Amino acid sequence: MSSFDRREFLRLGAACGAFFSQAAAAQAVPAPPVSRVPVKNRKDLVGIQVRGFSWVDEGIEAVLDNIQEKGGVNTVWAYTFSYGEQRLEKNGSIPLPDHGKPGNTIAGGAFYDYDRRYFQNTILKDFRCNVYGDFNVIEAVASKAKARGMSFFAWDLNNAGPTLNDTIPNYAEVSEVDVYGRRTNRPCFNHPDYRAFLSGKVESLLLGYPSEIDGIAWGSERMGPFDNMIGGVTTPSCFCGFCQAKAQSLGISVARAQAGYRELEQLFQAAARNQRPNDGYFIAFWRLLLRYPEILSWESLWTDSFQEVQAHLYGMAKAIAPAKPFGFHLMQSMTFSPFYRAEEDYTKRRNFADFLKLATYNTAGGARMAKYLERLSATVFRDATPPEFLEFYYKIMGYNEAPYDQLASTGLSADYVARQTRQALEGVAGEVQIYPGIDINVPTLLKGDAAVKETTPATVRASLEAAFGAGADGVILAREYAEMQLANLSAAGDTLREIFAQKKS
Ligand SMILES: [Zn+2]
Image (cartoon, rainbow, N blue to C red; front, side, top):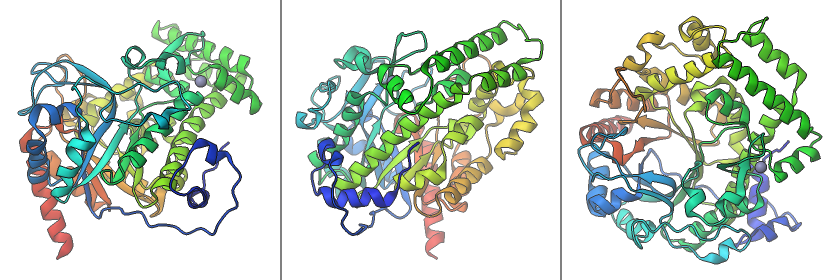
């Protein structure tokens, strides 16, 4: 449906000058010659995600000391917006490591002050998070990071957050509508007010803090209705008026898509009750797709809209600050789900990203992959158990990992990091920097008696060597500084210094 061309963005950028607005974007402008401003990507970027509460609880200089001296970090990814971050507790589902303060307060919204003029076109105007008082992460941290030679990136993470409907006025109004007509807590990428809100944030960061912000990392861990059903997360959405109108303009029948998704939900519910259809689950599933191709059309509609928004944000960022890197986080489903992977195509991403962070968390990845395989076995592959289809799954995904019963305790290998890095590099063909995420105490959220592989200095070292060995342009230490044991962070710094010294010699 959409095609995104990097040159178009640059033409638009040149035409719009310093200030870019949706109104300006809509005007037909004569295309000036393309003059591409080189993006100032840092060589061998080492980033780390830092939660708002880490700065508040541990002190800015203390955090910067740890990440720079221990972790070898040269680029701070500071959350400027969070969908709902929570302090950690000693015995919580994500345990407090050997630094930080315990607590369970949840903070969602913006951690910086913004000019409301960037939000004239949206009903979402009041989203400043005040859980940390008037703490402004950009004003407080950027200059201190830069004084140490580090870059400061705004990390704008837009996952669906259950608390935002309550804390941001009108947020519920932009949320997706499921196949039964109920509102959800996931904002709709086709809602013009949500789009204007996302655009306004990028404008407010780049225009409001031109000397503080060196780049923007944008993320949203969201999937279309079909992927969500396999994931077991939600009822299918979105069927709001805007999505329906867009579907109609593309010739997709709304009624048939709704009917198809209701039947698909019934099939998966029957699977949960062990009510095997006469021809088996997979054949029943495929028959449903044949009868309702609108199921896949609606999935594509969702994904195309999601990517369209990201392409728009990228184009706008390039118009305002062409040399500042603007890139995206890709969630770990990219490496687990053959369905999600088919929808997220690196060759398309070339046109609207300066960098991509891959969630290649290998130590936690074993338990996480096992959980995904369970979901496959509960839905489209219900005819078989995960151990029965694992070899076939590995063939599809290009993996050579542990047997199913050892996945959680073994984790995924460093080879998984290397393979994903190489695939991404080949997919973007040198147009986009590739930063694999390096697993340092990434949680699995697996409870109970399952033995789960833990991060050690050795696993951190192996992941980093695999990433750079595969040709990565940089890495992001992940997920959060707040979750990392300091010995593991130090292992990252030690390994990175060795890798970079070897590169020089
Ligand atoms: Zn919608």
